[in-house]
Length: 162
Image (cartoon, rainbow, N blue to C red):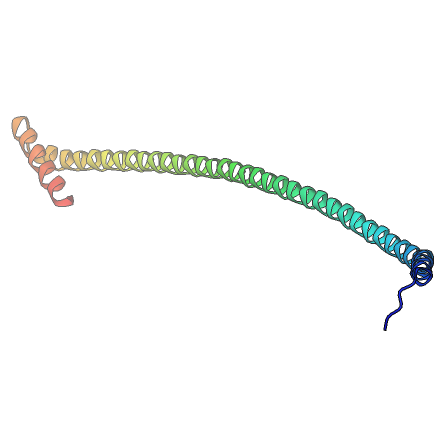
């Protein structure tokens, strides 16, 4: 049977206390120290990761800001290019209109000169015809007959040339 005596119980309790203290000193403290060191390393790594994440976020914000600035600059450059193109377009159109006006004016002047020359030539021809008719008539007729025949000859020659 089982004998329970007080000495065995006290010895068992003392053995358990010694075993608990030995385990605590030899196993639990070093294991807890190792766990604490690993926890510190893990915390350090998490802190470094958080720092890197913050740096990455800052870089991302700078990148996005520079992208916005680039977009704004692009809009300004495009707007300036459009303005310059409009100005050049207006300048080219104005120059073309000026050239067209000059060409038109030159054509009008040339037409007027040609008209003037044609009129002078026609007046000279008419004067020559009148002189020829006057010579022919004056030689054979006199007075009202001369005037009527000169007029008729003039009308006949003028009608033939048209």
